[in-house]
Image (cartoon, rainbow, N blue to C red; front, side, top):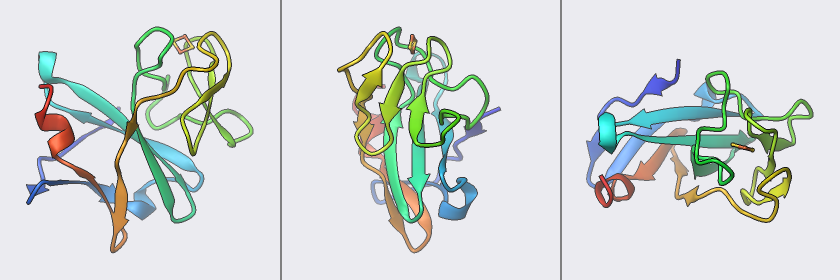
Length: 128
Ligand code: FES
């Protein structure tokens, strides 16, 4: 079960989790809102670096993970969609193999501040 994001918003920032709550390398999914306002994102981590994406495969528009927080291929070097196996770069979200080759995941701005992962809350306020 993916973490349901606790509404912890302050001054336009949404606090997601501590960096050490994400495997290294690995990823973590987050769910915002309910019903039509529901949004899913995931964050990938390698060392102290993080990259955020909408959890929506450009092939069929569905979440990439088949188990909570499982986004990597067996080599742990690429993001892999669980449904048809498309492979994406961790750093750029570009599909390098599979049915949506050449398309990209939708990037989201995320950052680490004092070991805490944050994203701008405004991302979620614009299309709810
Ligand atoms: S839905 Fe992701 S590869 Fe088909």
